[in-house]
Image 1 (cartoon, one colour):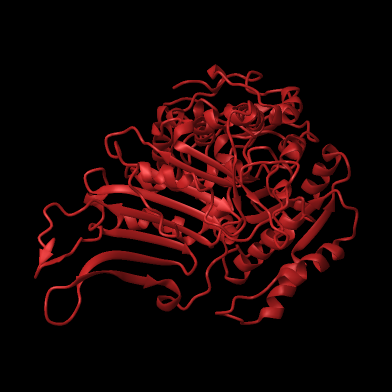
Image 2: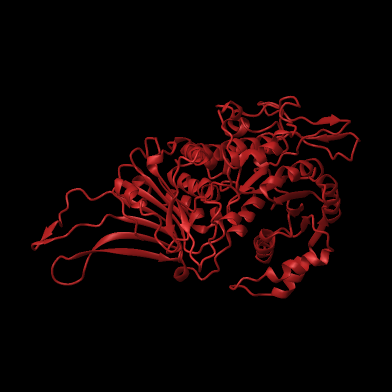
Amino acid sequence: MASLSSLSLSTSSSEISIYRKLSVLPLAVSTFPTVRKSKTQINYVAYVQPHDYNRLQCSSTRSASFNVEGTGSTTSLDTSGMEASIKLSSPLFGTQSSSSDAPTDDSATLSIAVIGATGVLARTKIFPALFHLYYSGQLPEKFGIFGYSRKKMPEEDLRAIIAPTLSCRIDHQENCEEKMDAFLKRTFYIYGGLDNREGMPKLNTLMEEVEGNFGANRIFYLSVPQEALIDVASPLAENAQTQRGWNRVIIEKPFGLGSFSSHQLTTSLLSYFAEKQLYRIDHLLGRNTIENLTVLRFSNLVFMPLWNRSYIHNIKVTFSEELGMQTTVRYPNGYGILGDVVHSHIFQTVALLAMEPPVTLDGEDVRYEKVKVLKSIRKLESSDVILGHCKADSGSNLKDVDNLMPTYFGAVLHIDNARWDGVPFLIKAGRGLKKNRVEIRIQFRRVPGNLYHKDGGHVQNLSTNELILRDVPDEAILVRINNKIPGLGMHLEASELNLLYKDKYNVEVTDSYEQLLHDAIDGDNHLFMRSDEVEAAWNILSPVLSDLDNNNETLEHYEFGSKGPDKADNLWAKHGVKWLDD
């Protein structure tokens, strides 16, 4: 398996600032002796994963024993699985590995630290999601929520900030006020100051006070800008991890600003944490439609034999938003929607649609199949890509005159493997379009030999069958079939078998942050991107990003509230496809 360091990477202008910050960081990868892993784990992550070490608290100099994590619940130093306990008399800079498949101690305290607690994302999404998990009984009996930021304020102010954002489930509404009060009493605040190396030990001290003498597991949600990520991660790894349980770190997208900066970011993170400790979160992947893809594919015999090039003509993935927004705020770099939606959400959706059945539903088995798909996707060529920029009107808030960047991405992906050879995956992702629509359409091939081509002198063209997985608007699963209209004669029409979720299930839809936080607590990482997935996704986009950097890619302008760039029609027509909204 190729090493990340062997890649030929080019540096774009948009990546220089983050590169300067990352390039000066010390790497722990070459500092310590090798701890051998099992062959299976090496296949998954060893080429980007540093050796696993248990790190002692830097404030302690007494001897301590620790276990080096293997691939299962037992500890090992080699592939024979022999257990070992090592005595050290001085602090060792490393990490306590997080074993997502290790047995969970039901008596352990769960501590969740939100770094950047006063930011918009934390206030509007993370804290409400944590409260919903608590209200639904999904948090352990002993837990603590810890806010951490550079804003100097008393603990009560944080509680006052997040209290208005909390709400109880519509389908429950039991003891709502009591639950809110109990949750807020378990929410604490630490002023980190301007130096995280001073702030993180304070966070660790407070966590230990709340956890007491019980076992402790910790999740750190890094809700910080990407340029501040390593400034937070380094002192966190040294000073805030527990030695009495697992540690997991949630990281927000974008995961780098291209291949080069992503490689540098990954290398730096893996010098502080083990791969399985890292949970790269994209809230769009927490939607029920995405969670349901593997269920639909692998638990329904009716679909399994049809899921290949012999029966499927094309697959269309749509991410369309009608509302605009300030692209300079939404998109932190010149790649616009490519980094915000395409690199993670779109490519992960395609991977889940196209992957082979995993050996098990364990996160690593699923990720292994996903990365195989991503590596099989042909690098994008300019002839298969349309990039657009929305021309804002006076009534929209999509205003970005001086900094043009893509708000529309249309492309045809080709997967070069035996299952999908010749099947185009058509992608349309854009903002400022005329409809809100997030869906997947699997269009099957035509029925050979149309028996109903002519009946009673009438020409009847059969519609192709489609399986439609709709997320927005109104989540639904639809199957498009040909059906006889009741009455005399043989007249056919295309009809839809409809499973509309709001009619079938009388429950409130779970927020995507709530779903993904629940997965992170459970150690289910199949919807979080692994380092090799991040790398493979950027490699697919690398020709397009290079053209943007060199001004070789033209952005097609389109009106706010339209279907997108007109030239996209030519791309779809080349593959014999017409989009429903077009």
